[in-house]
Image 1 (tube, rainbow, N blue to C red):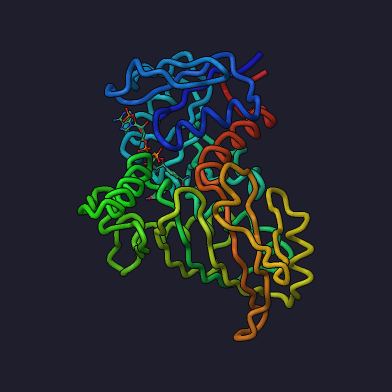
Image 2 (tube, rainbow, N blue to C red; image 1 turned 180 degrees about the horizontal axis):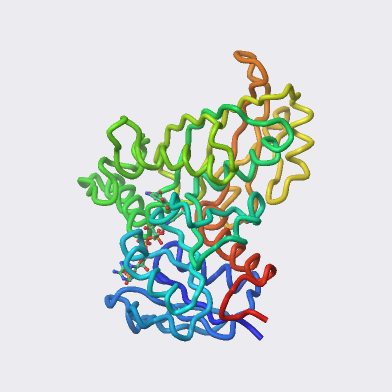
Length: 341
Ligand code: NAP
Ligand code: 12T
């Protein structure tokens, strides 16, 4: 017994990781459909020791599907997710298209799995930067209440997709050869540089990526009073987002209290021993499932304030793994309509 699964955007950076995650977690499937644009139809992708042949995504792709894992971009989700829901499938959407809709649960399984109970066919996967931050902060919020977060991110190019990964490689090679660099995926050269610009700018001077961290954090933690200030920065790293997170609790807490909570928090691994220079880095987290936390320390500049460094693989916990975990939790809760017992 298994589910009939479709991966929308299967040829992309996230889609390929979805196939790998389904395989590595032995997710029970009876069939797996790889969907992408017409450009990729017929292409073969490795899966479970064999391969799946990519099919063109159409409105009729979902009749024989129970679960759709979508990561083909916001406009593609807006066009095709309603057809999948109409066909009775549950869609776990990785794009920002529906995240803030009132009728759509926004779920991190370690944090708010109960929100799956009210799904109407569509569930949103949060933004990669938000996911790893709330995995680390949720247990602290439950115990002490978090009133304010100030976060700066150091985000990998793979968050922007397969073409952006190639662009960083090409720029490094062009510079090595003394040739001019080409910029397509990013507004300026990303090789040997940092760009405080991820997704589009809004009228308030913040980027959409920064505002996702504000609004999604409140929705996932179910608390509209949490104040969040974010600066999101692209760095020349292939895989793994790092975050400098400053947070202030409502109730008094000590570093020891917070460390103890993080040590037993699901999905978290504490990697913190300053005397031995132990802290997580993006390279350590490549291909790993956990959210790593280090550099935990009190912030003496404000009351009940703390600093920490949070790192996770953006394609895994930030995208594919979180989506597959949502599908697993839906199965556990018997919330997949076509598969209901
Ligand atoms: P990517 O590497 O550029 O891949 C894009 C995928 O979408 C490819 O499979 C592509 O297929 C497919 N696609 C594009 N236009 C299509 C169309 N008109 N019809 C069908 N398929 C189409 O991008 P990615 O990094 O995997 O990201 C994909 C999306 O996932 C992003 O736009 C973003 O919304 C979301 N995402 C979310 C997170 C998160 O924070 N949770 C992280 C990263 C990405 P072809 O090969 O045929 O072009
Ligand atoms: N612009 O899913 O460029 O909202 O790293 C994820 C990653 C949007 C999203 C990126 C983005 C999303 C990026």
